[in-house]
Structures are given as C-alpha cells and as structure tokens.
Image (tube, rainbow, N blue to C red; front, side, top):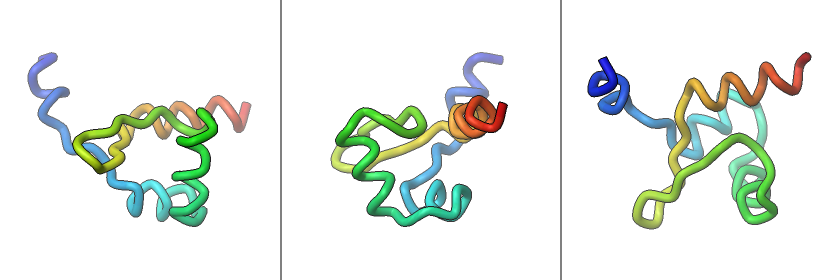
Length: 62
C-alpha cells in the first residue's frame, strides 16, 4: 500500500494556488520564509503533497 501512495501525483504551485485561492507569488514567498504548507523541491520545481496541503489548511481552520 505504501507504494501506491508514493506513486500519487504531487500538486504544482499553480494547483495549490488554485486550491487555496492565493497568488503563486505568495507560495514562493512562503517557501522562502519557511511558512505555508509543506513543500518539496524536485529539480527546479516546487511540488506539494495534496494530503499535506489539506492538513495544513485544516490545522489553520481549527
């Protein structure tokens, strides 16, 4: 089962921007400051685990 989870597609900056309703520039600023949802850099691209983004949002809503 762990293998299936590892094969799930990660979200791009644009997808997280759409999901959160915030500008892409804000996500890059948050990464630079160490804020925002957990992010991974793969090559020169930022990628987000959709479950981690949802948890991050839920933690702030509580």
